[in-house]
Image (cartoon, one colour):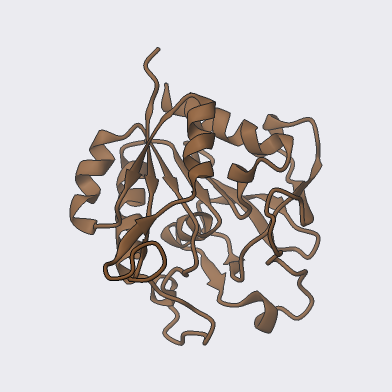
Length: 237
């Protein structure tokens, strides 16, 4: 069977660090490694909206990655921007368009961290712009490195896709985010919840469109690899 082609969204960085004088694209290798291990062929997608349609046609599945930036509040109807919010408008516009196109063409979508938040917003949901300052009773959701260790537990919801991937009802996951879902999109359902009530996973009931708030590419628990395996299997159908 042909290995499916999986598009993975890149981050765009300004000059500095790796390239001192010019902007550059970035992606941690463990995203690519997880897709390859599960049986896919990973390719990097630069965040240029002009190529969204061509990329959507070319790939068999889409991974929307996280990064040190936030979904524009305007996408979910909020004009006021919290001081902690960091925007990358070009990347967000590209990811929004290619995610919508892949869903329209029934191509599997996996959103990770910020990718999950984008999926929720695309389907009419909203976000809390900063957990520490706006949710006083919340757990710490931004652990310090290393990220291959669990930081808090999640509980899988009954009757969900994720529940079928593991025999465990509760698992420990990592956590590296300062925003979270406020309202789940009307056509989505929550797949996992943290002890403080924050939504940790969402899924679409009619096709493979899954979002997780943690970073399964670090392979912290048995569910992490199962997510990538199920994603690649969906891309082969």
